[in-house]
Length: 247
Image 1 (tube, rainbow, N blue to C red):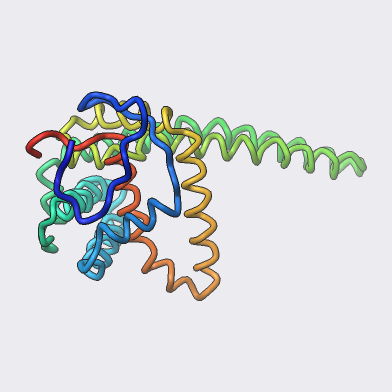
Image 2: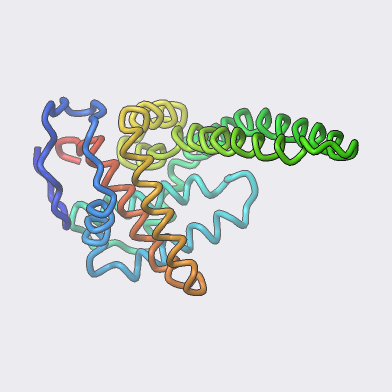
């Protein structure tokens, strides 16, 4: 399959799946970031404005009511750029054409996060109460219990955060690119993320490390890094969900 694109897509992995199916692909975090930068090309500064405008406006309205449609709009801009078009700022707001589906996807993501996070919060609260009770009695075991609790809770929190992240990693790209419903987007996103789980984890770790290092420099460099991360996420999406013929 071939389609016009301003960045170079790697050779298809072995076991190429038919169009519309979810592929398992090798994930090279640094390679994805480079290809994301190439995708933005000479319109990088416009995408800097697009991505941060979406984040700022989206964060001003609670419950992700407009964040979902704006994320769809960002990826519609990415799709136009992929097709070799000159993107306009107004394209960002065409995501509101899929307002209901984007909102449903966002609300489902929030609901999933709450379902996963609330039990962890309860466990942490109970553990803190037990630790306080033991400490009040002057028991030297308090420190040991606290250390064990941290060693247990940190992996649990990381796993919960990962599970909360999986359903949404590709959902807004899917709505923008394939026109699926919000529920379908969440379902397909989870399946794609699960199939490529290890690579996604490595990608997130690398992005997290780079962001942390950039944050040391007064946080400003992270602002310029963010659109590249968004573009890399779209490039990864395209690797897993190949472009449709004639689209």
